[in-house]
Image 1 (tube, rainbow over the protein chains, first blue to last red):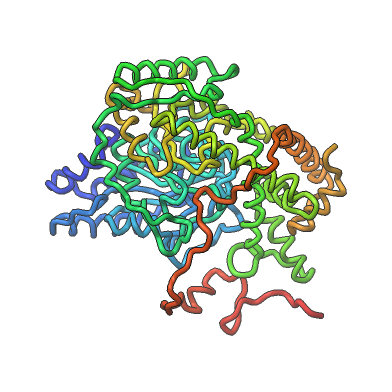
Image 2: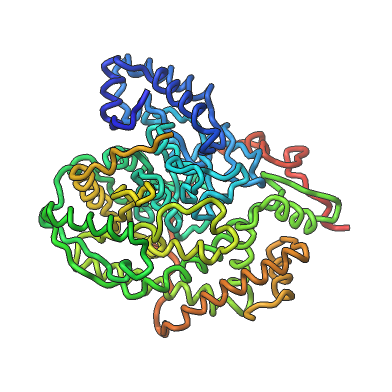
Length: 485
Length: 95
C-alpha cells in the first residue's frame, strides 16, 4: 500500500468509511519498514505487537464513531521522547536499556488522538549532530541515495516519512534538527516557537533552544500534527499559556498581499548553485502568487553558529551531568569509588560527539571562562533576537535556504566537526531567536537530491508559515516527488 | 593555542570523563579549533547588552502546592543499575 499521495485527512476518510482498517494500514507500514529499513536504519525500535494492538483498538473506536484527529494513523517518534514501557535510548549506549516509567506529554497527546505508535526513530546521540551518523544504533541512510546522510539530528524522523514507512513523525529541533533532515529527505518539517509545544518527557539537550516539531509528507499533515501536540502543559513550566489556533482553518488562504523578506545575509557566495537556483525559483513562484518580496537584513547572522554552539554545549554539559550511573542508564564500576564509577560510566556510555560537546561546554562554564564565553554568547543572542524582531516589523515572514548544500556523503564530514557545525548557519538563528520555521521541498539538485525551502515566521505565527508553505506546495509539484527505494 | 592538553585534562576531570592519551591529543586539537572560531564573537561590542537566557520572557512559574499521586518506588527504581531496600545503591562514599 502507498500513502505518499494521501493526506491524513484522506486516510481518516477511508478509515471512517470502512474502505480501509487501521490494522491493514499498520500492517502495511510494518511490511514497508521490514522491506526498507535494512537499507535505511531509520528505526531503533519497532513495536510491532503494541502497534497492532493499538490499531485493533482504533478499529473498534472507528466503528463506534470515534473522531480522534489521528485515530488509527500509524506514526513514529524520535527515540528522544519517553514512551511508557517502550525503550528510549536517545541514540546512546548510556541509555541502551532505559525504559521510561511515563509518556512524554506529546506522546500522550498522540495517543489521546488515537495515533498508532509504530516505533522509535534513529537519531544523532542526544540530538547532537547534523547527519545522524552519531548514533549508537548505527548510521541512518538517506532514502534518496543510501550513500548519503539524511541530515540530523532527527534523521530517522525524516527518512521514515520520505520512505513511506509511516504517515508522520515527531522530531526535535535545537539548531535545525527537524528542518535540515526534512530538507535533505524531501519532506515537510516544522520547528515551532520556543514554548509552543511541551517538552515534558523529552530528553534534554540544550534547554533554552530545544523544541518538539512534526515531520510529515505534506504541509496539511504537518499543520494537523502541530495542532495535536501544541499547547500549554503544566508539567513544562517553559511552555507558554496562549491559545492554540486551528492550523487547518486558514491554511488555504494563500499569500496574496503578504510581505516576504529575503535576508541578504542568507544569499551569500558559497551557497550551492543548485540550491540558489531552486530558492530563486521559489521566490518567483511566491511573486506570481501575489506576495510582495523585499530584501531585508539580519546583520548578526554571521555570529550565529559561534553563539549557538557555545550556548548549546554549555547547556548540554549541564543537562548531561545526570548520566552518572546512579538512578538509570549504564553503570560501569570497577571498584574505584564513586568518582571512578562516574568517570567509567560516562567514558564508556557517551560517544565522541557527545563527549566533545560536554568538554567544550564544561570549559565554557568553568571558573574564569564563564564571562568570556557563555555570558558573551548570551549577549550576542540578544542581538540576534533583536535582528529578527526588527525585521518582523517590516515583513510577515522570511524566506531562506535551509542548508548550504544538499545531503552530503556518509563519512564526508566526520573528521571535521567545525565544518559540520558551519553547515547549520541558516537554521540555528531561528532557535536562538526562539521563533518558528519550517522546511518544505522546493526542488531537486542536478544529482537528484531534494532541496528544502525555509520559511521563518514571527513568534507564535506558525499558522502564517504553514499557510505560505501550503500555497507553494499547491503551486508546484516538488512535494509529489518520492524516492525510489 | 587557546587550550593546552593540561587544560583539557582538567576539564575532563570536571566533566567526569577519562581521555586516553591519543584521544587527549585529538580532543585538544578540536577544542582549540572551535575555541579559535568562537573568538569571532569578540568582534561585537556587547557593552550594555542584556544577556538572553530564554526566548520567552518569564521569571518564575508558580503552581499550587497540591499533592499528586507519586510515581511509586517500584517505577522509580525500575531503571536503577543497582537497588536495595527501596533505595538506589551506590559505591561506598566514605571509607
